[in-house]
Length: 277
Image 1 (cartoon, rainbow, N blue to C red):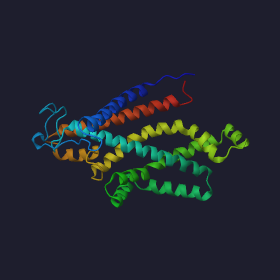
Image 2: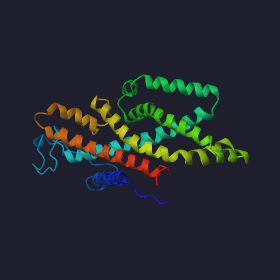
Image 3: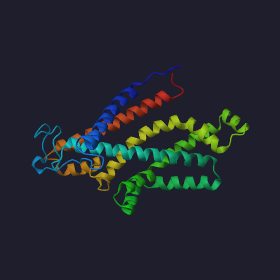
Image 4: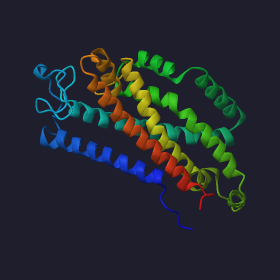
């Protein structure tokens, strides 16, 4: 039976489409209009426009405390956040699916190690683990991605373990085993397609979680880029009384992206629910 797109999917998809167009326009502007592939454009500093208000001095959203166009630094932060969050989400989901399946089908020592590792990670707040990892690896994109992967795969693994148990108990899986399908083929041809709808929903919702985690680290001074929205918010709080528009615009921009992702994730959950319609 055909299913209709939910209101959440339409609103979430519409909001994310605007952000995607924004990111694409910045990519073209940075690499083709104002810069090149070998020497991309970066927002320029101009102390004469420091803390300029929106629509003043030829700046649409004003300027930050370094005199950079707030629209340009927001655009750079958008592409940075989306790049980090997509890489981390796909990596954590892939690791989580494999580890969750192994927790069901692996030997006893794998199951014991899985439970122990999950509990150890959940004992400590993820932000503290990420801070410890960043303190060791240093402030780099590789270190940031590694820290977010270490703290993020466990949620996907628990979901994958529960879904794998459910799928493995189905009749057609027993039939596949009866005709001689091996475990590797079973995993790639049956298990993954069966659990993928649930994982996609959680991946969409997980992207917003990664954005928040990255911004939190950036706010604490552990970001990997000066264009991290968290780092920019950390700088904006120092001039909150002189230029409150900076923090407000940054917060609203981040909130819009997260709301769009959450709406799309909730809509996908309803759309992919086999009990609906």
